[in-house]
Amino acid sequence: MRIMMIGSGYVGLVSGVCFADFGHDVTCMDKDEGKIAALKAGEIPIYEPGLAALVQDNVKAGRLSFTTDLKAGVAEADVVFIAVGTPSRRGDGHADLSYVHAAAREIAQAVTGFTVVVTKSTVPVGTGDEVERIIRETNPDADIAVVSNPEFLREGAAIEDFKRPDRIVLGLDDERAREVMSEVYRPLYLNQAPILFTSRRTSELIKYAANAFLAMKITYINEIADLCEKVGANVQEVARGIGLDGRIGSKFLHAGPGYGGSCFPKDTLALVKTAQDHDSPMRLIEATVAINDNRKRAMARKVISALNGDVRDKRIAILGLTFKPNTDDMRDSPAISIIQALQDHGARISAYDPEGMENARKVIDNVTYAEGPYEAAEGVDAVVIVTEWNQFRALDLGRLKTLVRRPVLVDLRNIYRRDEVTRHGFSYTNVGQGAAPSES
Ligand code: UGA
Image 1: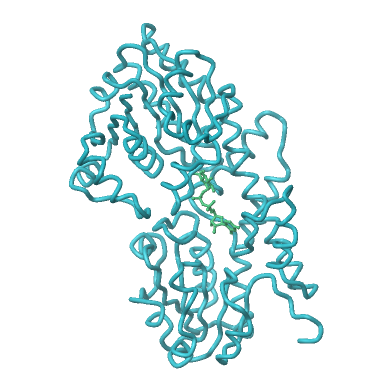
Image 2 (image 1 turned 90 degrees about the vertical axis):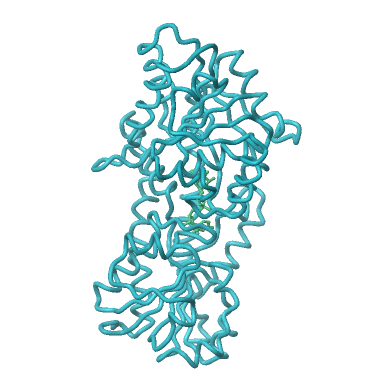
């Protein structure tokens, strides 16, 4: 199959290179000339484990190439994926579809022969219909079928998720498109990955319903964590106790500083808007959005109370800046709000993140970036773990103790055990572990 990927951002690049690895002939296109030039030179614009090597292998094998020329690629393609951004529209939270619509118009002008046009970007229900309308209006002779194929990749585990998916969702109503898409995903079909054929609108909604559910699940355990702190219970044990119930499941029950990233915050908001527009409000998701927004600043208050209520002119080390480990993505990272809130209260911040510091510099001001976790901790009044990078899971607490000014550790990801931290002379605050009456 000849595949054209329009948009070489996170989703486009990962999907494109994985399709190439399946043996398809893939061209990844982007309007950003700098990005394409870098990719041609073997430089990968994002940090994703395993991606650089996979790109290199597939370019070498002649199955993967990069271009800024949409027309030539679309004309030759059997399948054109639209994988452009759908950011939150400024002001109202709706998904901004201007890039998707622009891509549809350009595809219409370039397409030759029967071509399957697939939306891989996360798009609100009805977008496939709109893409089809735009293409048919722009070029009434175009022989196309429009398919919805949402992606379920997690940053940091994207290649694994692509190659071993829980499911593949294909929303379509055209027999020829079904054959083409079955061929595109054939290698996974042979691995018996479940493929779900649905209507296009159902497929579009599945993506939002899945992300919103996961965001709600995290928010639920975060509220349980707050209650645990009040009643003297342990959220990790509660999570295990409920997660072993197969109907609930143990994943996405890690309490923490609130969800962030490029997907959950944007998609929950867009689903709320769609639901309101259709007079079918989703109160659970509305509450999820509001609770998660509040949570990030609440985490700053937790740090402040670990320092007895006053952080003015105190120095605080933040370990981990990205919204989760194994990515350099800072979008909607809880670290941003936490640092800003601490700065508002007069704290001075030093920080370290294994991959995120370059992007962090663009969105957070007045932070001293350190070379490593120990360097960040020199002379500080508190060390705060915001992102659970592996590197922070086994810190040498004895060494840390000799570096800090005050031994205060705030662990917003629950990666330490209280006894091992307090044994080294630190005071320890984490998420969702209330003091039992006997300890207080
Ligand atoms: C998410 C979904 O998990 C993917 O299935 C989906 O394809 C993707 O969005 C998307 O729509 O493109 P991602 O944003 O990469 O993937 O990250 P997640 O691993 O889902 O984590 C999201 C946030 O939730 C992070 O801030 C993470 O720290 C937080 N989280 C996750 C928790 O606080 N607790 C958990 O138990 C799990």
